[in-house]
Amino acid sequence: MSRIYQAGALNTTALVVPDLYVQIAQPQTLALSGVGWGVMGVVGTASWGPVNMPVPVGGMGDYLQSFGAKQSLVTDAGLAVDIALMQGASSFRVVRVTDGTDEAASATLEGVTVTAVHTGSSGNGIVVTASAANQGWALTVAHPVLGASYYAGASWTALAAAVAADSGALVALSVPATVPAVAVGTVTLAGGADGGVPSSAAFLGSDATARTGMYALRGQGCSVAVLHGLSDSTTWTTQAAFGLGEGVYMVACGPAGDTLADAVAVKAAAGLDSCAVKLMFGDWIWWNDDTNGLMLVSPQGFAAGKLAALSPEQSSLNKQLYGVVGSQKAGLTGGTGSYSSADLAVLFQAGIDVICNPAPGGAYWAVRCGHNSSGSVTIQGDTYTRLTNYLATSLAGGMGAYVGSVINDTLFGDIRATLLGFLSSLVSQGILGVQGGALPYAVVCDSTNNPQARTALGYVQADIQVRYQGINEKFIVNLQGGTSVTVTTSMSGGSV
Picture (cartoon, helix red, strand yellow):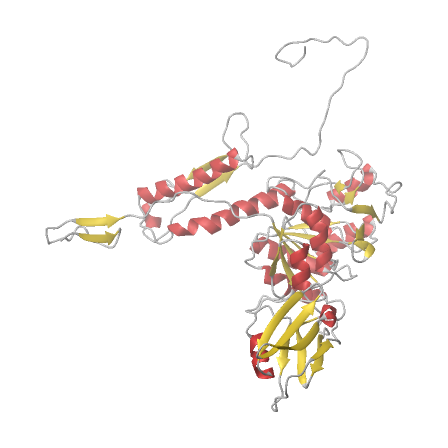
């Protein structure tokens, strides 16, 4: 009788019995898709939520449910999310950090201790109500921002079990050994505290098994990230190392009210010279927050939010920013404190960017340079960091399927086809561009770079070259005018 096999499961060179053998081959996929590239990582403080755990957030509604109301602190993660949303960012991974003095709100209801599942001041608004229900009791846990939950049970033990089974519960119940009878009652939790401002070490965190702080963003697919409101220069090179290893563009900043001379000196002393960090000058931004009113905030959220909203081949240079009321240099009116060309030259030559008004395109707020902190002219643009990380992350996420394959010309051809198809799609999307009719990429994966001596040891190598598109930073328009000028027109020159 006929036999059916999955392709590769049958040794077709050692068949003995005459029969029909059907092999099912899975569809061959030689396509490589680019990774999602709009995720912004935020490490900061909050009034609620898990500590040192990355939480996906898609908007302020998600943020408020997960982390409570925004704090009136420059380190607040909600401020960064809100600011970045206004610049067009739409996907976040938020990590809450604390100084360790934060406290969970609690209360006692009929002898049962009710404790908020997270620390922070938002827990003080949780109201817990016990009421009679059909054939038992109902427990209502409600908060105006965090939401509400309902549980049913015949006793405190049953109610506690129902609460414990809910992964989204706002509270936990501690029932004493002598279980009291359930009675009608209401209590509001109190005593929750946010703690003080975390140290720089808390923001950076640990890369141990239980990752904390910045390191909790590992593997979260972030293209850009901020340690919000942290201006400690001693952390900059650590942020650079993380960004290089994880493929994340870190946006750091100097302290509020910084001076040009101090900014340049501090950056040099810190030893920061890396394409993985974009360093913003300490000219902080006035922001009219819908919760806390007018606030002076770090420029990180504006720059990072704009970068997260842009395609990876784009620079932050001259892209209009929204929600800016003013800056420390310009004041709230934004009228008198503009930067001179000499001022900007000092910052840009030192690898420091700044948000200011006007921009080259007009009287609006924008990132003024579009550079990272590297001193090398070949890698100092936003585009280099972002597009390199995008390509590397896409390759890392899709080419691993070829590991374990038999090495032969078919494998080489499949690898080339996958890579060339991916790079071709980037051209069609405008991420890469053709200049002078020449393709901006080349792929080599054959016997020329994979000699038998290497393949015999299990090595396969693909060499890829990609030419990025430049960014128009210095636009020169030559004008010749006067009554003595002779004008020659031609159709090819575009004159009429």
